[in-house]
Image 1: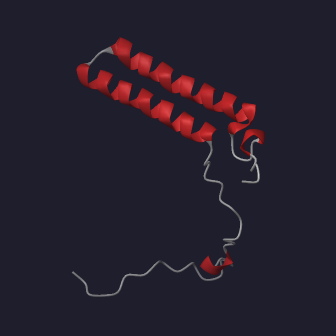
Image 2 (image 1 turned 180 degrees about the horizontal axis):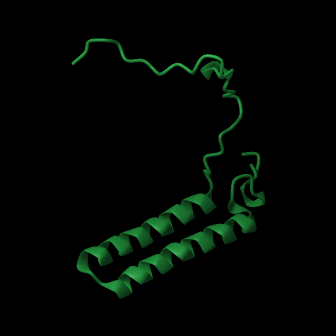
Length: 96
């Protein structure tokens, strides 16, 4: 094994790109909202159902897990439209 220090690769010369050109002031929008968390939770349950069905080789339960995952997408979309998404009307600070 080499004892050389490890560092990030440098951009190619002449590309006009530098790692220092990235603006970190803009929010990245990680989806921290009730709609996003509900979607993730429901889809994880669907993935768990599908995983168990795969192990026990049951096609019907596997398809049911896929349906649960699709329902998770629909629920998340509906919650976002109802104002529970990022920046939604139901999440405004009430001054407390």
